[in-house]
Image (tube, rainbow, N blue to C red; front, side, top):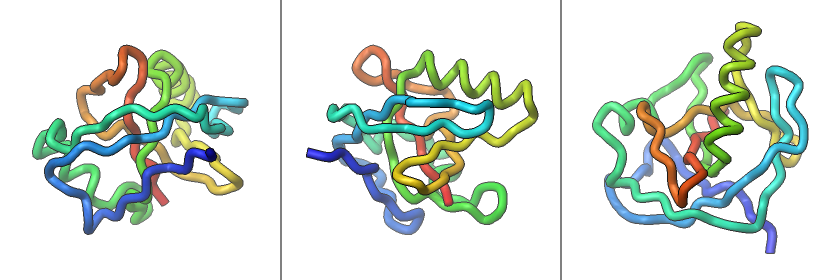
Length: 125
């Protein structure tokens, strides 16, 4: 079974409910974009865990009118490392999944670790 990002629209983000978000891992990173591949596992994400500010950021426009398209989970230690690397290079952190580039950002301002090692991120286009 192939894991695809959990699709969401900025106009249809629920205030509550639990969904299974697919986990992805990096195959490569060039300082700006990480090539991600599905791991075949999922972690639970509870929309009720979003603060009002988290919800506003998730459903708002980012950067160049980018809006949330999907949710995935990535390893928290990896995310911290690549966010720091992108910041040092003054670059926007992106990921590429099946030849599509997304701006990526944690859905919580205070990242919340799920299942001991994953953080849920939004994919924006």
